[in-house]
Length: 195
Image (cartoon, rainbow, N blue to C red; front, top):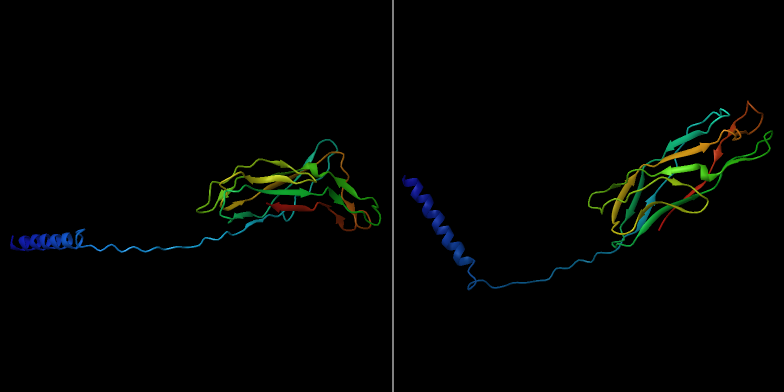
C-alpha cells in the first residue's frame, strides 16, 4: 500500500509541473515560416509494339489473327497540374517487302490492327487511373490512353495487339528463291506520341 501512495504522489506532482509549463500566462509564442518550392516535372511515356506476333496459316475460308502482347508501358505525368494528356499512336500499313522472285510488295491495311490497352494501374500516390477501350489503328493518330483531368502520377499497362489477316491475303514474300529463302514478314512502323 505504501508503494501505491508514492506513485500517486509522483503523478500528481508531474501534473502540477505540466500545468505550470503549459499555462498561457507563462508561454512565449514563437512562430516561423517554412517554405519549399515545388517545380514541375515532365510528361513522358514508354510504349512499344510486341517483340513478335504469332504467325498464321491461311485457310482460304476465314480470317486468321496474328496476336502479341507488348512489354509493359509506363506513362508518367509529373507536370503538377490537372491538364489533360493523351497517349496516341499512328502506324503504316503492314508490308511484306518484295524479293528477287516475289517482286511485288504485298500489304495488309493498318485498319486490320486493333490495340487493346487493357487495365491501367495507377502507381502509389497517383490520381485514379483512366479507363481504356480497344482502338482500331490508322495512319492518323488514334488515342490509346487519355486522362481528361486529374491524371497526375505514374501508370502502367500491358496492351494486346491483334492483326486480322483475311482469307484472301497474300502470303509473306520470300526474299529469294520461293520456299528455300528467308521470308519477308509483314511489317508496320508504329509512332507513339504523348501530349
